[in-house]
Length: 266
Image (tube, rainbow, N blue to C red):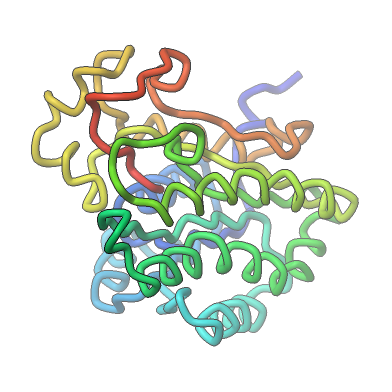
């Protein structure tokens, strides 16, 4: 039994959407550290994307895409298909949040969040199914949907579409897993708690305050989320299907419902 090898990603090719910063970048660094041969990253802002790729090295390949648009999803899937006959890992990480009061919450804020957080993961996976299936014939291909603990319990923040999208993504993960497992494609979700990032401004600006209600006593570190993603991307998780791995320092288990900042979305 070679446990160490089970967690290695040598020779594998992956795509991480929203991979230029935040949790997406943490995951990309983890996949590369575990030996991934190539990791494509997508984001809407080309300059930020290119900068991240240069910092992470030649095995990190940038592909600009706006996943809030249907054609953006289609173009990204086509770009991968042109370059790779098979795709071992797809991390659906791109996501946004929108905050507004219940009475003033706009339709535009609802639709934009749902398009990126829920529609894009489904249709990108759908369009990349041939490449994932090809990889799954040799070893299990992995799809990881980045959800959030805000999809598991109501957050005190008025981010209605965000919380609904993440709850829906967790359920969608189960349904996708049931459909794709026969193709050798394993689908799971990963739900982060509080990680310092641009989206989670509270954790970035006041980390001590943000960490106060976390049972583990600290914010999530890059290694925490990277290691969880590597597990779900590797052969170590081949028999784990349709689950939602929570990485939150114990918040959900402690059933904390108030006096804490909104979680990082992805």
